[in-house]
Length: 316
Image (cartoon, rainbow, N blue to C red):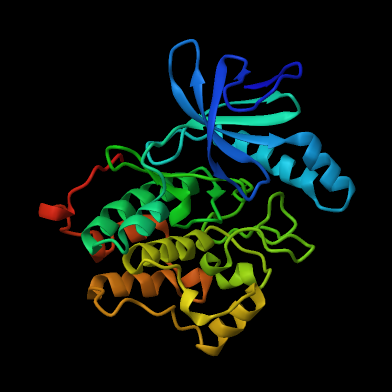
């Protein structure tokens, strides 16, 4: 639901309708902050993205494109309200208060997989398999809904107290048209919230972008296969793909990738053969040759891996 209200402070401890805002837990690339919120009717805790709309409008008038960022967040909220899956962060509501846009969503107390990597280092392959299996369940659901996430990485994969993984941050996601085949349908670079808009600026995370996105070409659901591979590689290595290349721009990264003649990023030397095969499939330069999320879920890497230390919560 979309609501508006008269001006009121949204500093920590202030109320926003039925919600009471608490401390900041993160700052986002969308120009705002993420806080914990308490529903004063029933005690439910939630995460809320706060974006100062007036600041964004001033930035837009000054040529900073802030209004576009605000529109992208409205788009994210509209997209999230359609999604209902245990491996997708749940949407609660979106409200406008004190010239702030507030997106309320499910609070995932365990934080991101990226935060786990910062604390504990690279994950054992068995644990990475558990998280990857759940991520693919969420990705397959998105693709059945004709949605390409387009920014898959460990920091956009949250884990709750029961080790259930949930995909988050749909700011660069796009709903594909209903026509044509989903496996081959392309997304125009001028599409709303496109990861690489016509201005040439890169929004998203280049280390996890498929070649067609770095080249600012039309692209489709296969970019999520590449992004998933990058997130899985990050889990088992502790670092994003290509991070050891020393490149400092998307253009330099693309040149580095081309210089490798389409070879995948370096893989951990101790990775099992099934894991290496899966990652190589995800990092195929030709988008049409990459497996779908459904096909990846049947890959040998995920077969026979539910015994002993490989057990974890599976929501789907």
